[in-house]
Image 1 (tube, rainbow, N blue to C red):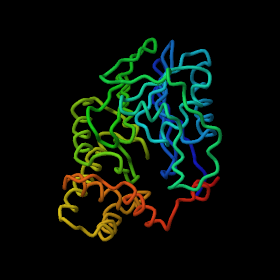
Image 2 (cartoon, helix red, strand yellow):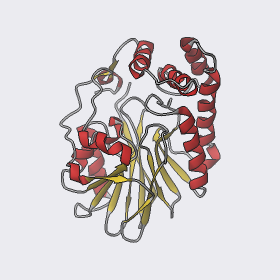
Image 3 (cartoon, rainbow, N blue to C red):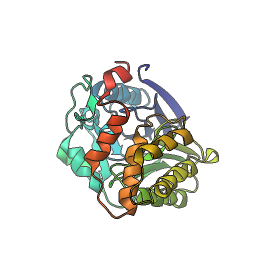
Image 4 (cartoon, rainbow, N blue to C red):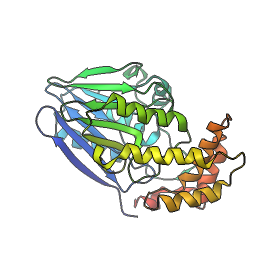
Length: 310
C-alpha cells in the first residue's frame, strides 16, 4: 500500500480560513483533520496517530496562520487515531476541548493498541498537560476573532461515548469526526448502533445548513451525495441482520463485503455485527472477542508498517 498522502483542501481563504485536511488511503491510523483560522486564533480539529504526522499537520496549519496565534485543539472523540498527537500539537501551548466522557482518555495519553497493531513508527508521543484538557458538556462557541465556531457534543453514545462535532456557519462546514465515514467501513465496537442511528438523525436536525461534510475518514462529501443516508442504511442493516438469537457472523460479514464492496477495511464488518447483536439483545459486547474476530479476518495482528508504506 502507498504511503499516507495528505490533501489540503481550502474551503474558504479569507477570514475565516477553513481548511479540510484529507488523508488517504482510508486505513487504520489514517484519519482526517482540519482547521479554522480567524483574526486572533486558530482552531484545529483532531490530530494524527503518530508524532511525525502530527508535526506535519501543525506545520501545515501554521502556513495558514502564525506561530503567535493561540491554538485551540478540538478532539472529536478519544480514539488514538484522532487524539494521539494532542501533546505534540500543544508543545508550544494551547488548550484542548473534548466531550466530557473523552477527557480521561485524552489526559491518559496516546493509545498504541499493541494487541492489534505491529508498528514501529509512532515516534515520541506524550500526553497533554491535564490542565490543558477541558470538557465540553453543552454546545459551546469558540470566538477566533471575526468568526465564531460551534463545538457541539452529541448527547449520548454513538461511535463512542464521547463524540462531538465542529460547525463553521459561514461556509457550512461540519467536521463530524467518526460519526461519518465515506468509503471506509465504520468501527462500532466502542459505541452503540441504535445510538449512532440517533446521532445521524441529530446531525440532520441540528445542522440543516451543512454544505460540506468533513468525515473522520474518507473523502469530503456534500448533502447531495447522501453520506448520512448511506451510513444509516448500513447501520439499519446491521440490526436487521443480527435479529436472530444466534446469527452466523462470518456469513453475514461476507454478505456485507458484497453489499459494500468498495469500502476499505471490510474486516470491521464482523465486529460491527457483534456490536449490533449485543445492542439489540440487551447484552454487553465482549470487545476482546469482537476484536479477535476482526483480526482473524485479516490473518492476525495488523502490520501497519507494511500497510502504510513506512
